[in-house]
Image (tube, one colour):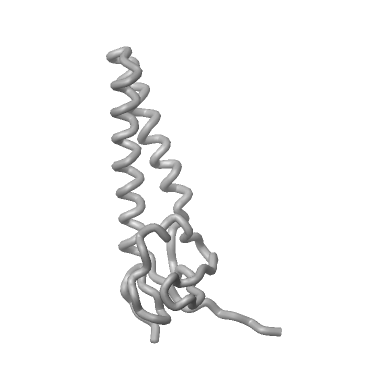
Length: 108
């Protein structure tokens, strides 16, 4: 039975752990940690753009703060805070909007 609940295994219908969000890629098959059934994301964005947004959200505020205050520690801390927030929001968005379907297996 296919479920429409986000980030849920279609085999055992249990929620997948949040840490698997970084493995999610289009057409990438991975195993459910509970039932070991193969699952594929139905429609998703790659997590790679989460790294890009995290990097940009670190670099841009960090450079602005460093330019204005010339304090490298303050600039790093503010940049790191922006990185953590952006990375967390992207992860949460993907967790709440990714649906899985059963992987097709072909035996020869």
